Image 1 (cartoon, rainbow, N blue to C red):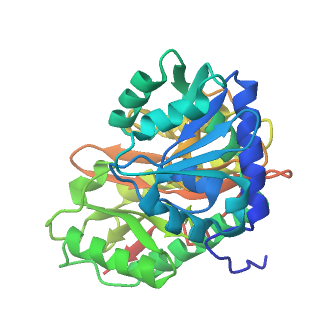
Image 2 (image 1 turned 180 degrees about the horizontal axis):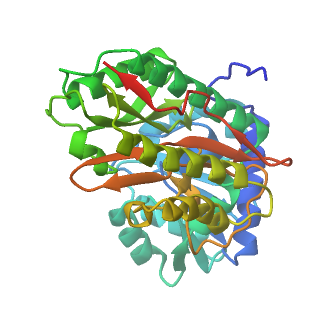
Length: 378
């Protein structure tokens, strides 16, 4: 499959469509307006990430009518530059330093709204001041409406996820070709971040290096522990490329793995493949979780698989849908998420394999291509 190089911003028509669909999602939930401050949601709707600061910037998406963008006067030039022609689709409302922006929002909504959806990552200070200024307008969660928009990826978004996955694969392959023994976890983590950037990521968000007994801690923070022969090492790496995230995990062994570890890893590898294979339209998220959990349990490691099978991915590393027991949501084409079962034997070792998988009309596409075999490193 040919993957085209993409730029950071989509065409304006994409953001016009997103704004219209956001208004539709608000109306469907009996929400009169969505209030979106600088965040991933803001970037999703407008195509740029406004600076998050103590001065209020708030995109107001009404269920009907033209959206407003309330922002500090000094931020207006930047907004117009970043928005380009899309600025004509918004009513831009700059406020001066001596004005109260929360009352600017109230004046715009007064008489037009009784329920307003507050974006998930809005600062508490903004929520509290909006609640006071907008009373008696009821503030509710905007998260479900925004999640409904963002959880199904378009082909263009999947292209970007594919590019990010390939870049992460390149970094993973490169680090597994280097020497591990005698280096610290922190040193290898820093090296992985360099490799992620060299492979085309704009930012390296995380680079977990968990060695020896630390490999049994799923979210271990790299330390000054020196990696030694006989260590299992879990590598969990990812970053942002063209606005979309990568996330992949592989496990290596320093020197020759003992038979016990090989047997455990074989269970894990078969379980991860089973979950990837189970992905198809109509299959529920919890059924995919059961596919790998069942095999890990049969292998005798059920109590050592201590987290969900996966999480959605897109502009954020973790977003909906979550692949976990209790989530009966049917998978749909365009859902993108991780499949990352792990086995963790406390105090001894652990292993994890993680790929990004997209639900397609035909079944699934695994975006990561790097080897899932247990690789011995020096």
